[in-house]
Figure 1: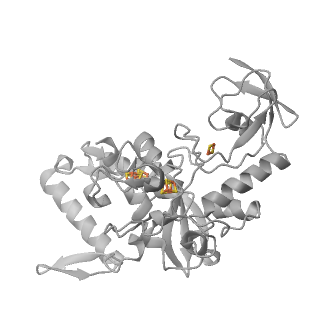
Figure 2: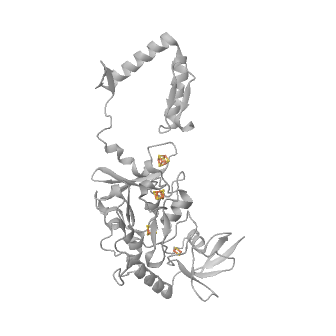
Figure 3: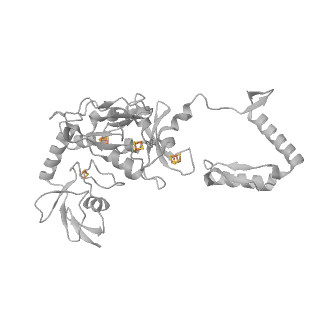
Length: 352
Ligand code: SF4
Ligand code: SF4
Ligand code: SF4
Ligand code: FES
């Protein structure tokens, strides 16, 4: 089905299966959200995305309501703004703005960006969720559910995108919580430490443990680049502060990953500051590895290659290249193997 609808007085094209929220976004009309993540099924839990539909009595959640041909939708007016402010006040009762670690150290969390936008006093009501901080011994993720607003973005991403089902909603009402299947720590659960729950969480309930205590948010520069670990080529934003890489967030616009990362790209990039990294070539002399110059290393490699080729022929060599290298350097490697060494024993780690 396709057709047209009117959103805030603007005629928009209607695609079959689109929610009102998606149709509005495609038309450049912003509707605030908290529980929405475009990668997963809508849950309709936060109600912040409410809109009015002409001819209907009550506002509806635009993330969960399909748009229809001929619909007339209003996304913002004084009454909707008022309802959104009330919703934000209630949600923020569990999550005051002043001491939010994500806002202070990583960058503004979605909830507090919205409370500022709607000029909401986050101390109007008092929540009942204190004491839900989990002292989870895993090295990557802080789980502080005293900050949780129960939007269930984390559990849906974990199940629907990562398909790990490591975290699930549990309990009812004031006893609602996010749990692992057997209430274990994340390390004992099916968690792959992809970090996608952390990245989708709109509050500081889930945070990158490695990023905390490194800098204030205003000291951090984000550099858009490609993950250095494998040939998938996921887009990442490297967070840099005080001349050090302090963490990574996914590049949501990158075609290869569209916001997803694996444990290496999400939590492993700090290897670049490891004191164990090799900084010069090492040559084994009398059974011990000793530091050498690049000239010494290249001369040794050339001499050994020539010797092996002379004694055993090119077929004695096998070459593996890396998908971390560029296409050009991989091309050069096979050219070197075939044309210089005379070997067709060639492979690439991306093939396995
Ligand atoms: S890190 Fe990934 S696998 Fe682990 S709980 Fe979060 S989304 Fe699930
Ligand atoms: S931990 Fe974060 S993403 Fe998960 S339900 Fe709570 S607020 Fe939402
Ligand atoms: S995030 Fe993981 S899958 Fe993506 S490029 Fe890096 S290592 Fe490869
Ligand atoms: S974003 Fe639609 S109900 Fe939360």
